[in-house]
Image: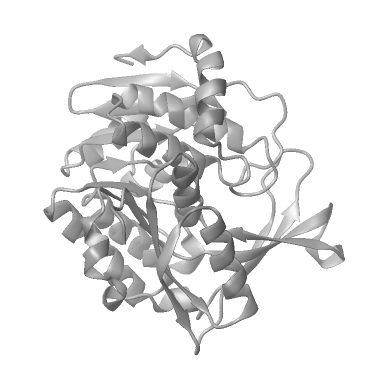
Length: 324
């Protein structure tokens, strides 16, 4: 395996997107794509030129082959994606929302191949990656996947690698809200950069104000926190600085799913390129705004050339406010 810039892990599902709006029960035609917050970020970073390794499991079925083929076509190294003959590839149905609202998503992932990820899935060469991106989804899939999440984040941080964490809460996958909050906050404390949405941060910390939410994680040893505020932009705080970066205007919202993953792509890519945290948030806001203008979870994520040309053209109108 060549040098790894980013290691990402989790579950990529097949996704069947409705071709018509309305109740999923009434839809007769669907378009097959892939879905998964963790792999969305991996794809976004690959499109920006990073060497990304993907750690996962799929079933020995046609959906698993479709998932791996799609990820490899996006440039991901899938040599650590195991094929599980005993458990199926997860999939989901997604409604079409033409009014800019959140689509309805129905998941079929219980007992999937990816839920059987475990610490034994970790190949030692993966730990040489420069950066690890983790979310709160794999630890919600199963106890063994949760153990793997803790193992990866702990070992990467101990090795001096940078670690980012997006809570990406999935309450329906946890036994209780209390368990979810406790485990997610334990994982967040292992990261350098924590990237919650405002509603997630409020639930996880019990605080309402973004500054207090950020302080909660900084007090646990996190280096920096960026809190997503939807179309308004994002608030960020480090041990030395804090500020607000406004969102980018969007004429038409096509699909809101994947906006947070786009934000993570912008943040991680900029920080790995040694941009300051405020500039990273600005890039995150822009990629997130681009993501909502395309139908599909990752279709709107830009290439390096697209980002270079388009971001420079709009960045002047979005000043960064320090000491918010």
